[in-house]
Amino acid sequence: MKAQERHHLKQNEFAIQTAKALEIAKQNRDRLIIGVIAIVAIIVIGGGYLLWQKRTNDQASGMLGTAMAVAQSPIVPAPTVPGAKQAPGTYPTEQARNEAAVQAFQQVAATYPSTQSGIAAKYHEASNLLSMGKTAEAEQAFRDVSGRGGAIYGPMAKLGLASALVAQAKYDDGIKTLTELSAERDGTLPVDGVLMELGRVYVKAGKKQEARATFKRVVDEFPQSPLVSAARQQMTLIE
Image 1 (tube, one colour):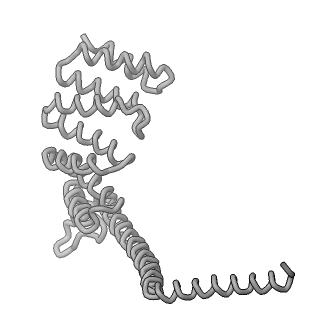
Image 2: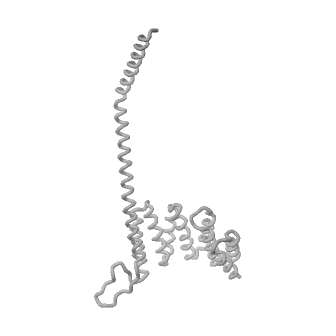
Image 3: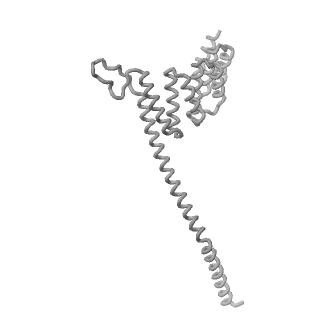
């Protein structure tokens, strides 16, 4: 075949393929347009969601910071001069400050429940309730956080839950919670510290043998722990 003929054949083949491609594009033009619109919509919606999420997190973080400031406000005795008012940002008693802090944390947790700041607020709410002696309310708040607190607030909430349970003399439940925590070797809480707390709860529950065995675990399993001396001392106190 001559070179000129081969050239014409290639040109014809290219023209045929181009025509087919144009025809397919024409037939699927609506689909292509819809596809492009869908992609653009996804990008716009996704970007909008990210902006909304950032704004929400920023607002929740700021609100949590305000609540934390309340919880750390100074205690200043109420003024005795007639007509004088309490200085702004201060509270006359620890009880009054705790009550204000609980309300502030509750507001954050209720407004932004699914954010990290909302979860942190719920944890601090539970801690303040526990310090106020409202152990049943603290128990419920700690349970809420322990179920959704992630790697940080989850274990901390379980530890707080154990304290709330023990404060209500629910020793078996507290022991169960601490035993589960002590099994989390890769968790955020130091196991030797959890075992020390578990040993103390055993003592309160009158389970001396279990308490001694738990303190001994601290000595045997964590010989470099700064808690070893305290564990040994606790063992000597158990009759």
